[in-house]
Length: 85
Image 1: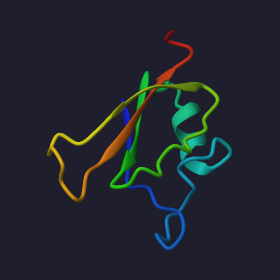
Image 2: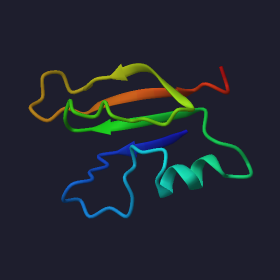
Image 3: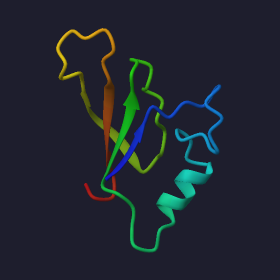
Image 4: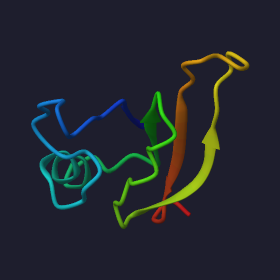
């Protein structure tokens, strides 16, 4: 499993764009000689994390907040590998 939590690309000053398949993180993960993760969890505190786009993974479900109706509630998308079926 790979978890990408609160990735940020705008003012986050990250070294890569975690969403994109053609960027550094995807290359490292997908070219790992020991294999790639079966599941990717992607999201953060916002409902705007629906833009994960690695072709090898497809959206399965969403995990909402377990804090009830908290003002700040994480939303995580679960993506499963197409290879693992």
